[in-house]
Amino acid sequence: MAKRIVGLPEDFDLNIAEESVRDEPVRIGDFLDDFPVAARPAAPRPGRRDPPPRGGDEPRSTGPAALPARVDEPPGEKEPPRAPQQRKVKPRRDPTQKAKEVAAPKKPPRKQINMTPETLDMVDDLLRYIQMYSRQSDTKASEMFHAIVLAAFQAKKHLDLSDVPRRGQWGSTTAKNFPVALSQAFTRAIAHAFREKRELDQ
Image (cartoon, rainbow, N blue to C red; front, side):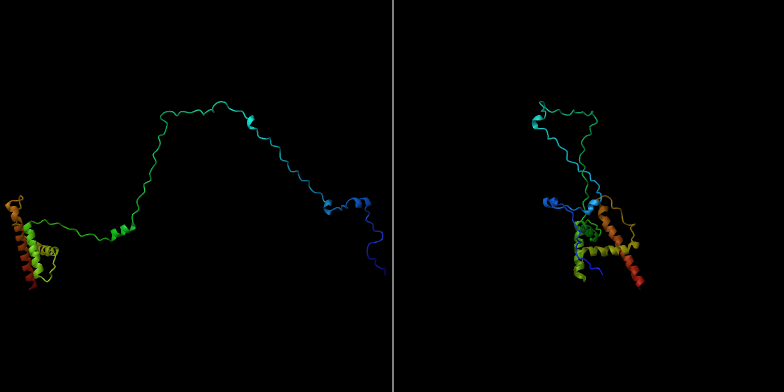
């Protein structure tokens, strides 16, 4: 069996000139040099700009600047200036005020009665009598009037007004006697209603 020789063979030679080794290092080619590379376009070089003109080179105007020609509008076509429109703002209603209006009860209707001084004295005397001799010492005038009207209303079907004369003019004798005649008619009607009720109860 032949013996294997280790190392470079005896006839191996780099074949490098001594001048190239002495002057500069050897340049060994790269494997990329074997493939062609597409040529890239050269970048454009910036063009040369002309310097701006100096201040002394610009032409100077000796006269005033020309104003633009004014165009007059024909009469009657000019629109008058409009006044700025004010937007109407509706005031907001307070919700608490609305709730108070809804919650507030309606007042009962009232009727005013005009009395003469004589009639007013009789009302006061009658009210004091009721307060003194009844079990309710704080009876009010409205309650007394309610009772009188209730008694007259219940006897309405027995009320005969045929004997009551006309009032006539104010200040006349018939005008003064009109309340008296009317009270007598109410008295007869209430008495008739009382007798009828007593007969029904027996």
